Length: 302
Length: 237
Ligand SMILES: Nc1ncnc2c1ncn2[C@@H]1O[C@H](COP(=O)(O)OP(=O)(O)OP(=O)(O)O)[C@@H](O)[C@H]1O
Ligand SMILES: [Mg+2]
Image (cartoon, rainbow over all chains, first blue to last red; front, side, top):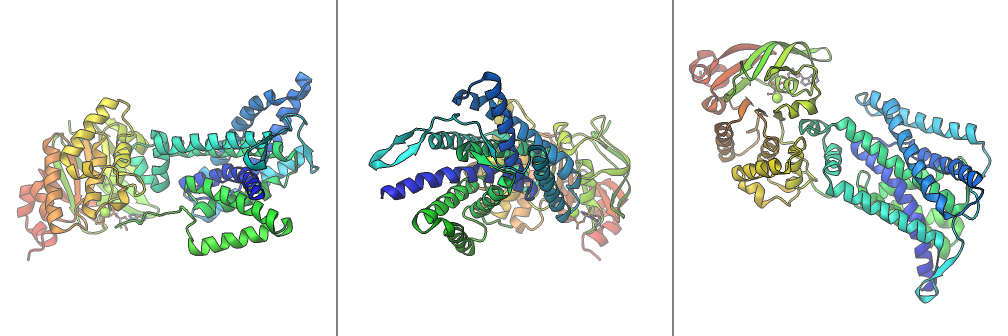
């Protein structure tokens, strides 16, 4: 029981990474019906920008410590959000009416460019974040379960962000417009909604969250290389599909479930088999719910 | 000065020449109907006015402003609202959220509340269903929602594209009565209909479209007596 709880905490930590990144895939899919293959690489760029920012601040102040994380996190979010908007303008918007295939190629191209840029600028070697940014201690919970301060930080930040995003999308005028645009661009325009503006907003929020997740993941594991975007991006993409692509609570749920299954598989069976177990379960879920856990539950009446 | 004036309008879809020089006017307070066979260009006329497609030639003037290059979402702000063909409600938004999207261009909460009250007066059914998802409404209720949603911006000119299509005969009657009621409360209406008889009955004036051209126009009462109209659109011999 204690071990189960321990694994569960580890699982939701990993799961919240997947969820934060999955939100970007699902939001973009919602408004454009396009898989933004560059999203995993934007996430990875968050880790690199975080590295540059943290290293610079540590060198400048000649000291580390948790206080420098927040300003760098803001810089990372803003930078990656701007990357996202730029990619939308340059790679996707000109192809908006060019059919389904051209934007997919453009998305793959953007992904390759981002990855090559990272490798050329930062090099192919493993990068390590400055040490001592987050206190290393653990907190004891009930029943001998222990949670690291790092995990507390990760969970608090991601759940807070997800709650804010949920409220934004489901309780505000712009969030409702975003859902409207996901359903019908033309009618949204006839309502007076600036559809291009809404799409740009989605490309600010999704990559902003994804970039921040990149920095948090790098903080959590301590080191990474340029393949981070590919590995995590794929898992997050799968989370989005699992939850029902286009569905925002679905992306959160999908990420959590994937993280938990993976961790339990690694803990109870073997780390070598965790991916096999995770994917078998995913395939089973999708066989029974092809649209994902929360995808398209409302039947459209004609 | 007419509220809407269209001159020599040409619209293309790629190489398809859908509108071949349309001239049309709508005076403030009128119901004007546009009738014609399938593919005549009725929907295209409305889509060109609301900015969904761009004309290649000609001029659209609303309330003294030229609309040719104004983006669709700004045309709504100017007071033109288009209800497109086919009951396109936002299915996974609630009725209330659908209506709020109709009021998207309004900033003033009091105006929004007033418009909502007006829409609920016109369609009490929508008030009963306000927390239901749009996709769970019946066909007739969905049509009420598309019209109610458009009225939320309190347009001066309402463009309606085949509002009666696919509705049961009783509902068709109700929809036409509602259109007359909306007009009586001060909204100018440009109505596209396949159901020419019903449309001519409530309209002040009418235009007949054939393959992208206006072939006949005049007071609705006169067109209803016109030999050609009776044969081609009212199903008489
Ligand atoms: N998206 C499009 N691409 C190419 N051609 C189109 C498109 N939409 C309409 N057309 C063509 O333009 C012409 C006018 O179409 P439109 O939809 O305006 O006719 P309509 O009078 O509304 O017909 P209906 O009564 O069937 O709704 C038709 O010949 C149609 O085939
Ligand atoms: Mg039509």
